[in-house]
Image (tube, rainbow, N blue to C red; front, side, top):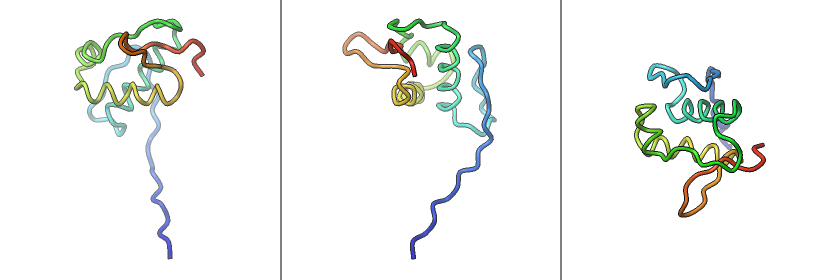
Length: 97
């Protein structure tokens, strides 16, 4: 008999472009950062085809490690909001979904 997958119960929180990472929140820091970056793209802080700050700078700004920032960026790449252009950097896609 196959075991049923475990349901993930998470409180979904909304993050704005000016929010900070809450270390006590139920969401992981990379999820919070992905939501903040998503909000910044939606607000127009970063226009389509424009480069976002490097992981080191985002890490300093939000007080997160580089791997955590990279994981958040990977989420947004998967969602089609960001793309990597080697060797130039990470850019907002031309038509964010």
